[in-house]
Length: 82
Image 1: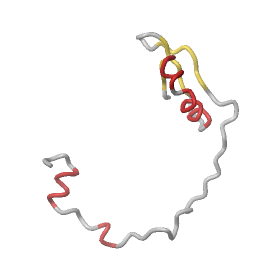
Image 2 (image 1 turned 90 degrees about the vertical axis):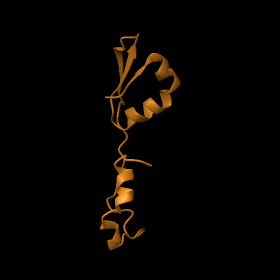
Image 3 (image 1 turned 180 degrees about the horizontal axis):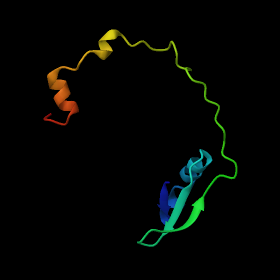
Image 4 (image 1 turned 180 degrees about the vertical axis):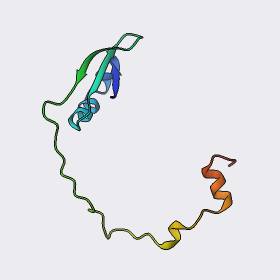
């Protein structure tokens, strides 16, 4: 559950409302201890109709995509060197 202090909530209220509309419960806290005081929830979450496969046919992944990475590039992905 995302949380924000009262100050952060005043600064980012529209973003927090958007998260609540997407179905999340947003907790508003107070003080240095971040004690929960309020929960922001949507009255009726906005239902988004999502269709699976809507990007089908717009891109192409060739068989080389599944080839192993070269050793020097694999070291970079693993955070070894630069």
